[in-house]
Length: 104
Image (cartoon, rainbow, N blue to C red; front, side, top):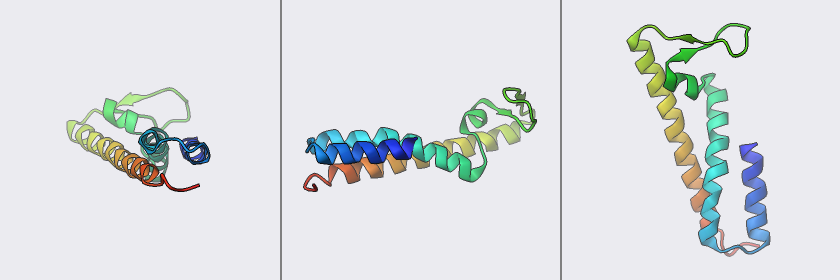
């Protein structure tokens, strides 16, 4: 959804010749899409990692707490890295949108 939203928004912004300063809004769907792709690629839920939870069972919605502090710390670091990479990707896409002002 994030990737599709980014592409559609970018196309609309270019087609309607929206001011370059508004194109930085591409950051939002791009960062959201990147978060999804990164989590899928790493097989890791950033939300669970930040909250110290896990779910390996077949029951959807049933979570358990990560008991060991060392593992909670590692999970939190991995979740934060996913979010940081997502922000960087969002910033890069927003900057690219800003600098494509002359395209049509």
